[in-house]
Amino acid sequence: MVTRYTTFLKAINLTFDYIVLNISMLIAYAIEDDGRILWLKNQSYAQIVLVFNLTWLLSSNITGINQHVLYKDSVKTFKHAIKTYVLYVGLICTINIMVGTQAYFISRGYIFYSSVLFGALLCTWKLLFLSIRKSKRNTLFDSRKVVIVGYGRNGVDLHDFFKNDRESDYNVLGFFDDNPEFVKDKERYLGTTTDCIDYIRNNKIDEIFCTLRTSETDKIEKLLMDSDKHLIRFRFVPEYYNFGIKPLLYQSFGHIPVRFLKRAFDVGFSLFIIFFIFSWAFPLLAILIKMESKGPVFFRQLRSGRDNSPFMCYKFRSMDLNDESDEKQATRNDPRVTRIGAFMRRTSLDELPQFFNVLLGNMSTVGPRPHMLNHTEQYSKLIDGYMVRHFLKPGITGWAQIQGLRGETSTIDAMLKRVEADVWYLENWSFLLDLKIIFVTIWNIVKPDQNAF
Image (tube, rainbow, N blue to C red):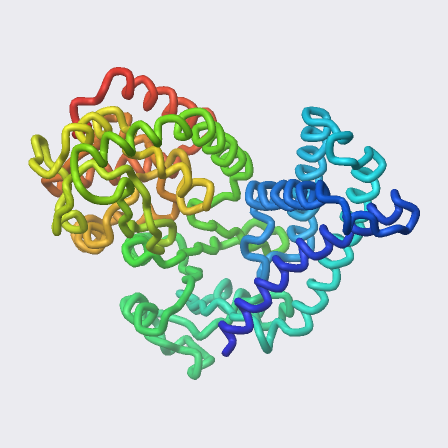
């Protein structure tokens, strides 16, 4: 029931963004037409509605305004709302300059009034939503279940902080510690540090807060490796009392900084590829694919995405229809690969449909390549740290690919090198690094990689 309410409220929040947008447009039209409702007879108005709504959709997709909407604090909520609004107004003004207003029977005054009204109504709605969320947080919203490893001063203070903070959405289930005799709150004691991972897996815990002393390095490293393996958020709370300052909580949110620039580039670059390359390449490749073999033009397959959530990945079909596509990788001189398929794989043209995955938010232009579900399950058991790569969105290309680590991974060592490259990218990400990877990828298309088959 709680999950149902949570999903419902998320949908309500998204819907009301568009409701206040369209209300502001109607009011602005009434102001410009002296209170008349001529928009009912204006056939061009439907086009204006579509353009404005799609512009808001693009803006909200770029900024991620609706991500974690139930858990963001009020400052971040308004920061994202203002950022999205400014981007929306900028895009509308750009469209106005490029296309003009006369053809659609609207004025610059209409754009001004609708924008101002929308900003005011959007802020009012966000205030109302935050009030509703605050009043219903404990009854309707899902709390993130967490455990604390280490029953020391840090651990107890952290527990009290979550308990007393009304804005917190953390539900602390208890402590793990190797010295149970020192644990005063016996009802909260869950076991030793070696019991932690099994407990978390069996009880669907969301995160671990580790307050062990830095002198217990071996235990911390073991917990960190096991957490990565099972894709569990691991947050380390360092000792701070010896610094003579007020208590501070340092949190490491995995390797997932909010990268507005990366998402904005993904959307812009994807639209460029879709409009200027995919639009004319699609009909040509579709004809060649259908001429050579029976079956659909597109190949769809579930792949492992961010946080190991499966998503439907799209490609141009490069093989004859077969029953092994979800289990067996393509190998050199694979008889399943068609002639046009071999060409597309060498030049990476088969990956073009994945730019729609990028627009949908399932993938990024640059990131670890998404693996088949059975390969994720298989290699996660064989390679320590394999699951760390799933802290990022998968990419169409990546650091591992431009290092020649693509194609078939016939040995554990080959997959290990690819994982190491993916983790290196995750830890060293920068926008310039993404640009470098894209440039090298384009160069490799001109001069195909020997491992592209």
